[in-house]
Length: 244
Image (cartoon, rainbow, N blue to C red; front, side, top):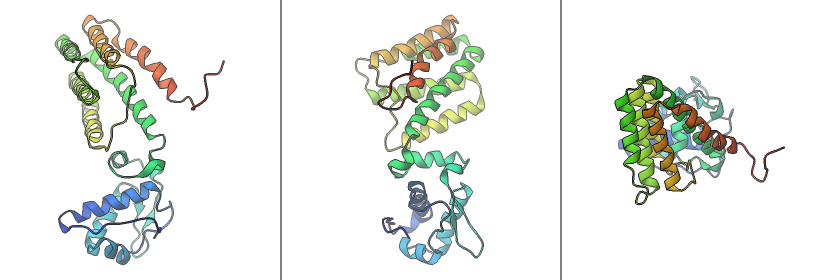
């Protein structure tokens, strides 16, 4: 057992979930190195104050996400979290106390993913949504008050805008993905900041995007022109300028 890892005894009513969350956070923080074994069932059940049945429920959930390998009659081995393909692990990084190392580069990936997802949604809405949908998106952007709305209000606006776009576009996969994404953002201790631009500039982008959708003036091309410089900046190392 790593000496700095602290576990908390749990209430029975939610113990399996809480055991899972504490073990998952410890694995994502790197308290248990990939290839190492978790402490024995007896030790963990004593530390958490739960039965071995509850502990097994938690460890099998970890195994289902690709964070451990449960071996019958043997030790439970920790796997490398970076090797899992289970999207639910992204939700864990959002919501659990996983430490700075696990989050290194993660916010950059979040911002990149959000911008590229916006491009996909804009392209689909441009091609598949109705004129009424385009007008509804424009009206939503025009209705936001940049003088009184703060960051929290703007995040709520963005969620409503892109959720409406996902519904209007009619792609069921993107619709479910957008819903899942924003649910995870809402449950995170803090949401990644996607822009430091003034509020008036941010909402102006959405109004122009909506206007171009209504006017059928290459909205996806406009979107890409605006976000491409931002995406490029994500990969510029601190203290280094662009090379000639």
